[in-house]
Length: 117
Image (cartoon, rainbow, N blue to C red):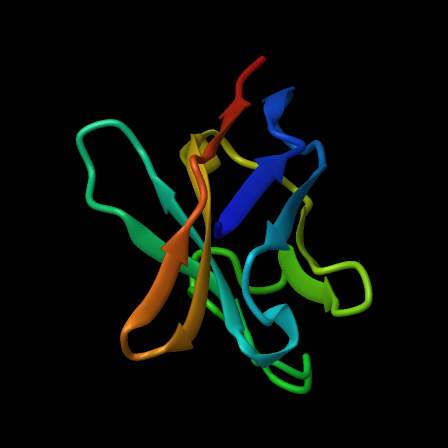
């Protein structure tokens, strides 16, 4: 059974930091590209950060470049999203996504991140 379990969300003040984690099981994690998406209220889900299966390449949405960093530990089947200099507009539910192949795409249940003073 495939599972992606996010953790690390919460309430943080503007300018603060959070690190999200996503633990994976039920598929070959080391062969999956991993992504973080987010969805704010009344907005479409957007891709925030991506990392290749080996971790050799990453990509970011323009809105988070220089502030967020995606990484992975294939030995622990975990992907991370380090978020710094958080802004109110970063408030959203953050979802972990795994792309094992065209037909094997998996989602976590999401974790809420709220940036507010």
